[in-house]
Image (cartoon, rainbow, N blue to C red; front, side, top):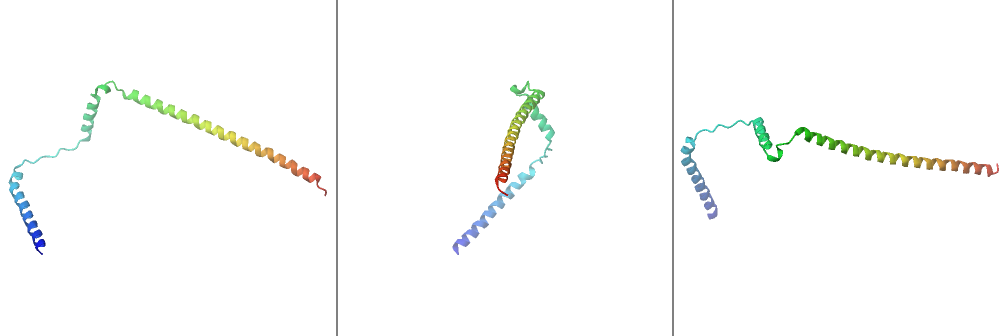
Length: 124
């Protein structure tokens, strides 16, 4: 019971202290000038950023066209390597399929000969 009363008194005193501070600072807050918010202009921010980036010493001679040419040529080389590897895999698959097919045909004819020989040897 005593603890509960202590907590309630502490809560009331804390609330009064906060209210006192707020009412003491209200005239100061009322006297402050209103600050107008700046409009967020993405285009101007990006332009400033691009200018600062271009001002960097190692990017002064940077050419976007040359960069694009290098990137595209690397993509082309990668595409050609991929195409060559795919062609190699495809030719290996075709060779394996042809080998398997020829083996099946060889055994097919041999089996037919065996069946024919068995029929010719068996008395009817």
